[in-house]
Length: 534
Image 1 (tube, rainbow, N blue to C red):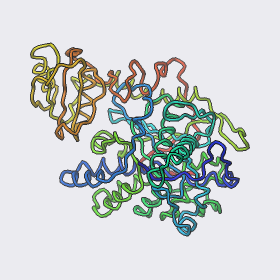
Image 2: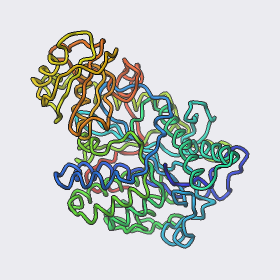
Image 3: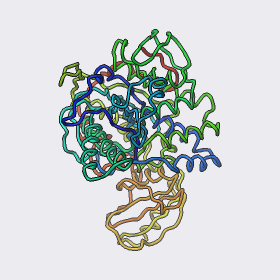
Image 4: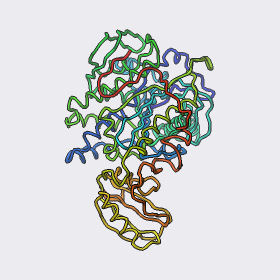
């Protein structure tokens, strides 16, 4: 479970602090940590031989995981084996078990207010789409004050609120209910936060119409801790700034930031031309700077630095329980390669609701923009990529078990897969017949399993601890039909949803003739260097 606390976010019947309006821009703890550490480290570190297994087990042993994805209704399906990753930054001045952070530390290092001000707001929401073919990663920041319909994890609506508040409303309702039942302490905190995560995931899926396959959550302390391990981090500003609210006091141009300064850099919104939107661009630019530092300064090969990062991740970050870090690392090298473009989703204007400023948005337009961007890579894959029989097979030993009614089906399929470049394992009869064909894989074989799932047009491949590392187990069901030559893996529905017939990661009409030419809030921030921002 996670550990950030929601102390200040207003629940039903609970008044909102008046100070919150002045401090709304307080702390946006970057979801970048989820990707910077979990993907950035893994892609370059976990794939090194001897050190790979040490790093993998060091990272995953004791990592905090969440079951929130299991509880929400799956979004519409993928066209290919792409991955959608939601990065969540939680505004909190508490530790994982709900204890207040030391007051002096909060004031001096975080330049933030008390725990009564730090609400359970998700002040950073970044949705990343990682194509299966290693193509360009699309990343969208969702402005925290977007006024939208928010949902609980079970799909029931909460009402119209700022999107950042979905977590807090669900947390507060669960906290009140569970405490009335006698739950207290860390257990109460952990359980309540699960409801908050479920609400955030459900709200983003409903707003954008795309599935969320994985998520990472980090809070204020987590950002500071990792920035401290990596400091100094170089950033670039177009103009000098001096902001008493965040503590940001920097000249124009390139400069190296320590952890305290880094937090001020990503928090500032006062005194910026576009306020919160400029702060969002700061977050994106800082993430790019961090990845640039990891790559160029050899941190991936520095065992001491890496161990420090691992320790911080295990203490400060929460990921979903379905996320296999090593498999993700082998698939997502496009992230650390810098092939990422960050955009901020557009708003239509500003309004006042319940005495507070909000962003107005067009949910239908947002769906079209995101679904069109996410499905573009899948469409290019299905039209321009080689068929699965022509693509290079990912590493993996394949074992085929016959649970169908066709004699010799397992042997024949194993021969076909060997001809396609996969390492042949064994062909045998399944323990019992089954109606559907299933694919399971061990550690390190996810990409091969996904390719084969596309080739056979099955349900998504699943990780299994009973499958040996590097192996893929295929159990043929009575629904099995041998694929025709040239079957394209990208045409399968082997994403994270049971929905079928959808385009890309979105709904069936996401690639309609009405797909808009996207207009984003500000310029694209490209990963791979040190972008200069306001």
